[in-house]
Image 1: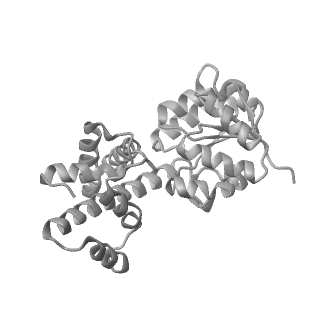
Image 2: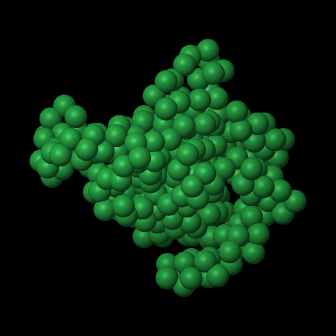
Image 3: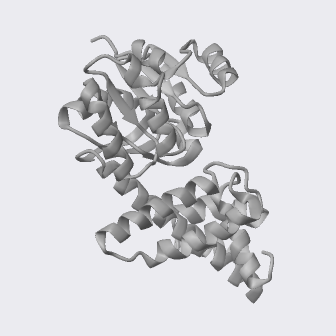
Length: 296
């Protein structure tokens, strides 16, 4: 069976790694990126073609994958004057792996529909290391037929690929998951600072938590960088703040409070206001430190 031609838009920290896995899996690949030099470097390394615009990307592809920052960027790539809809044929499948919320997803899908272009929302979780080794978790919302069409591409980028329901449900699940991650990272930062202030050995504290009921993925990923104050970005704080805010909007629309996410949003916002938005969200520690008047 001939593999579908893939167009990939957005070659940032996550997108470049995801696109590389599509190339390694043997999909005919065309890429587009706002910064042309980034696309040129990627294409040279991975034997991919380059499109001059999202419209050209669509003309060269059976499936277009987008991995950009927010809903405005997804809308611009798919529906802008020289966007995917301007070049795409009826039956083209768009898979949006960005995190933009269900409202934006449904709005964009409604505008693609008159063009005969289908949409699957497939946000990912796992950060840059899992994007690199194709072990992301991908939660896809859309019709059965659209998911089936895009499944082989998704499985080239992720280890756990789930069809979670109709269009928009992938977004909702992703936002809840990221908000839990943000709340967990806040808890890890607070725990480390309490332990430091109490004079306990932090190596012992982390080892006990990792082995016990206090363990979490965020403890494993963020305790080390927090202790070293090394905020080299794997997932930018500004992006996590955006996701938590979208989750809180969804919670409010459903009439449900999410206190842990509210606490995480407050700390992330404080860190962002300190100019740390481009750092990893482990920098949430700085808000905890400032509140306590103590450095870890």
